[in-house]
Length: 139
Image (cartoon, rainbow, N blue to C red):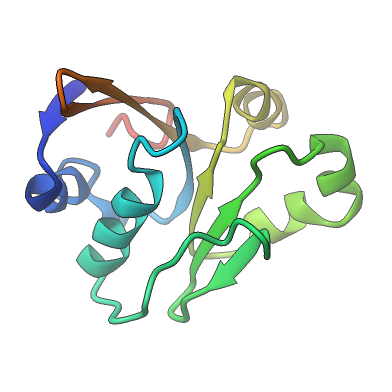
């Protein structure tokens, strides 16, 4: 599934994903400055949270309350993250938005049977194209 959306239309993506009814793991990937954090802001807002969403780049993880979590794993070693308990963290009840959740993490989640939704953001002619894949996204 693919959509070209403007920033003010990102709430539509939350509706398409039926986000309020589907807690789980959401992997966000795209180039630097493609809009991953902007998308998380829109999704967190669509969940009814008034939390101030920022990129967790230097913290790795942010907790917005109401079971809404936001991670940035850019340049993080997956084995090291797993050794620190990252897998147990994303298995918690709630919405887990993971910036830089690439195909390597997707393969691991698939192998261990954890459903996830992968949202790939591409910039095309000053617009953003959102490609959606994964077992959590197909309902």
